[in-house]
Image (cartoon, rainbow, N blue to C red; front, side, top):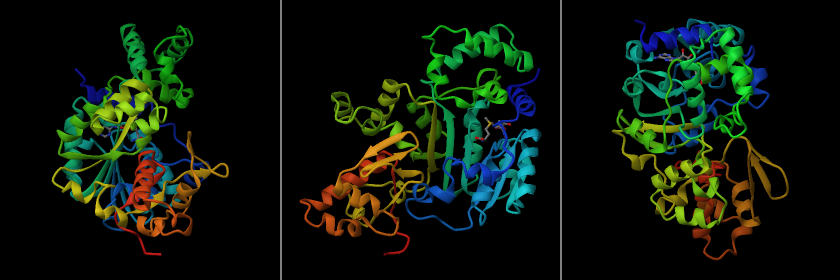
Length: 402
Ligand SMILES: C[S@@+](CC[C@H](N)C(=O)[O-])C[C@H]1O[C@@H](n2cnc3c(N)ncnc32)[C@H](O)[C@@H]1O
């Protein structure tokens, strides 16, 4: 009998995912960003300072485009893409040829065999992959064993709450024997169109714009194998497989200050809890998280190297940096993706000058902040707050002093 990994291989052979695009530059010009791309997010990935310019990057379960995109956006890095699906790799090769990506190596195979490549990696990304494995822990362990001692792992796994309805539909379709073929896709579309208004799956459909593509519909509803995680299950997954949790790639989804009405009684009450309980409770209260995207480090690495402590003496030497994608939309208004923010004049003076070269102490010496009472406390609180909202990345090592 065919095992689940055989079924997964067949599915992605027939329905290569994500829906491919023909030109990386044209796609990037539309604002497309790869989650955790070191070209943009190094300060968040390595708060202690990026270990080297020429990163060795592994894209585990790269699908149709991810490895080529990272090779394109990180031309000085060596990028390795691995996938079970030859059909997906064929598109990665197409993009490689089109853009002359000589820094990209592609391998067809199982990510559990990644050690056979015979090297370790500074940055490993595996998004939308491990939750399809029969034993996701074995997959994560194999990857963590090839992570360099100061490397970063970025993972994305499905989140349980918002996908509740997805599993209900999967269950019903499976019982009816609906296959992942053209007829099955058409039938699934009919089913989705016929559901009652209050069906749980609508909560997911609100954020699943790509379902117009048949490969995305199959990936979501006709997948032979996937599972989802709650926040505590994410920690358990990471910590049972050789890694330690660093932070969320999009922290605003998890902190009460970002995910709940600011200053509300509920937010205030949650803020009394230990951080992990805050995040777990926010997930349950909002039911708005569809995927968990996290950064993790080797368990053996001393966490004080990469964890930030805004109350420490060291914090005045931190170098904040505006996160990619921030747009100013008004005199004191900003937007990052769908997240809006308004800043007061003093906060704005700090935020606008946060360029990764100035330390927090430098930023607080700005003339506009000179007369603030308790300037240090203000600086620490604003920086921590904007970091929790994902609007600031915070490096422990300023790039060059200004
Ligand atoms: C949902 S796609 C995600 C692709 C890509 N990571 C992205 O985010 O765009 C999942 C991919 O993982 C691959 N995959 C699943 N299990 C795998 C395994 N054990 N080893 C290597 N690739 C695997 C599939 O073939 C498929 O291309």
